[in-house]
Image 1 (cartoon, helix red, strand yellow):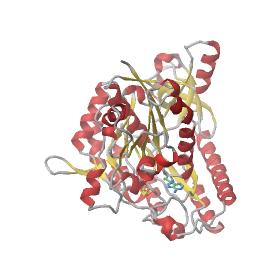
Image 2: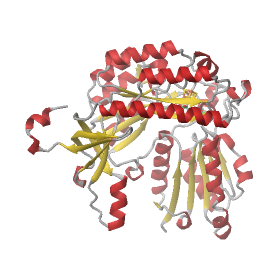
Image 3: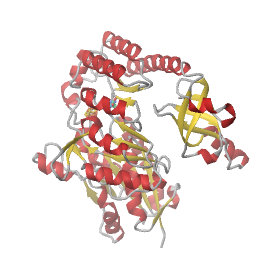
Image 4: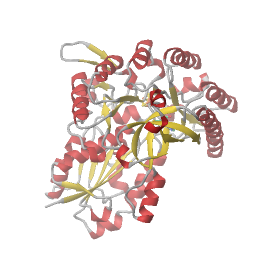
Length: 476
Ligand code: 5AD
Ligand code: SF4
């Protein structure tokens, strides 16, 4: 009999990919997806532990299922991903109606665990070893990567896919829970990455995004013992027929080498968009964060990018209100944002995470309202910069991979029940969002679009048609 699966995913690209793969493995067992929890036989929550807020949200969503589970005890409720690894049995205590807890290193076990629950074997939990619970080898082995099957329906779009190249992280930034919950850094075999990418391209994928916590630190040996770095992978991926765009996230500033930037510059399919989190513009704060670089190092990296990669766009992450961050420290961050002119920045208020070095060593001493103020101030500055830089693109032709109808078009289509929404949304090679009027047949294609207006995070354009003359087509 057909079984129904509801899945909610929060967090980073890694989680989106994990959800896709878990859904694919459950589809093989006869599951179909539903967006309605009350209709589902199995409900899974793929969770994030990076900030307390995301964990609290998951608990509140779980709380809403209490009644449903009471009335339908046969439904299976599972928590997977980082929070499952972080809180483990505690989840059973806070939400006693949860049946299943699975860390990010055990996702392949989900189908058999659900079977056990359905066979009356009670609650199931599978998690990896903690970072102090064994030898490095034992801990590494307890975090198994999970990349067996792909499911286009779970992707952002059927022609875009994430490809995992690395799991875990060994950087141990003092604020960050990721090394504890995702385990030691492990580079995936280059042969596997290439095989999966070829398979995706053969099935219509035009854009792949390589994902890892610090993708540009990627290192792995192939079966002949040769060492591969990210630049080597990019060179091979460039050759895959059908692939048009290759992106990679997230980068670690210290590993943005000349060799990698040469690959970004020379390989036409590789996006010149680089997400390289700076986190703070103050050396004192960076030191307490144990980021492993100084502001001067980051400036040098920016200079290298500017010198080597034409048409680049860099984006960043910041944490405001980290332990001991003074007004002066914060002003230094503001200066760096002004100087680096990021395409966009993700700004977060520091959230102390139990189990991190930061929680052990420093006091979370910046009041919430100060964190909020700094967050607002930095965001306003970044938005002004994003707007100014977008304005410089007005009149240019950009090449847009069309992702689908825009939100407005979808809303309108709902209202008038017209599925042929014509306002489309897509992204440039530099990851800029572009909205334009088009035809649904353009979805999945790369279209030349002339920019005529913009907001801080959106360009508005018009498709360059043949009527505009062949010379315009040749532009950009
Ligand atoms: N509090 C706030 N933000 C955090 N990040 C990581 N850990 C924390 C934390 N404890 C942010 C960093 C990272 C992004 C993914 O999340 O900026 O780059
Ligand atoms: Fe966390 Fe730092 Fe690793 Fe990024 S590099 S995942 S911030 S520990």
